[in-house]
View 1 (cartoon, rainbow, N blue to C red):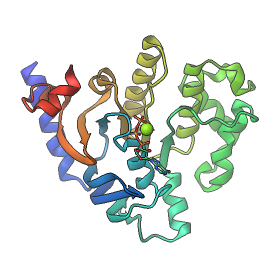
View 2: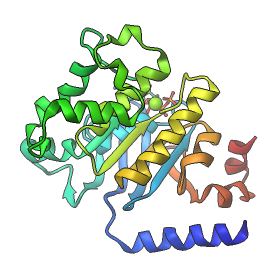
View 3: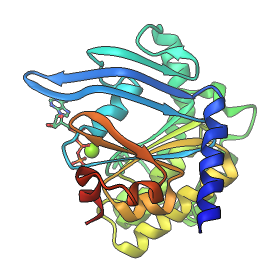
Length: 259
Ligand SMILES: Nc1ncnc2c1ncn2[C@@H]1O[C@H](COP(=O)(O)OP(=O)(O)OP(=O)(O)O)[C@@H](O)[C@H]1O
Ligand SMILES: [Mg+2]
């Protein structure tokens, strides 16, 4: 166990020598008088699954939305794939977003479209990411990789919650993102289905070589999928480490997550 931990720490340090794919410095975001993000520093490195854990309402979804500029941060620096997100023009922003898969909290499928149409949607917006391949093949492959090829002609209302989450994941994968942002990928699912989604996240990390930020308030999910965990408290990155390192912390605010 100790050796495994050491190896994990070495792997993390090696990753840290590479350029981060995402880098946030002192990011602030308020809504009126509510200060949500209060000086976040964060980096995502190649190949890693970074879990951000925090209480409900602590600003996890706001943080992800600021990264892709669905929300405008009030101040600070946000760089993604080497580009300054707060300075890029609309064209570059669109191209960057095509390289970032975003699994929204809930599943956010289009209810009036079939599964296939849902998956085609991002491809139609970003035809440059077809890479000369047949779109039907891409849809089939993406669905097959989440074990749902047979649902291709179904409507979202015909799917269970777990299936919807998988279809949303397939839609996220279809543009072959370099970075995947998962917002509460397991929330609202029963424990067995949640575990299947966690296994899928690990498989995606292995086979697609994408780095991921995974937002959750589920410690079991963090333990299962994280190479590194950041704890969000009071709008800041309060603590960071492997799951096992944090589990040994004596800080009462960190310990509170393990109760
Ligand atoms: N568009 C918005 N306008 C105003 N306030 C917002 C907006 N989005 C989020 N907030 C506020 O920001 C705070 C953080 O919200 P956020 O959705 O990021 O929490 P969260 O950590 O994702 O919680 P949960 O675990 O419940 O998903 C909350 O107080 C919320 O009311
Ligand atoms: Mg949220």
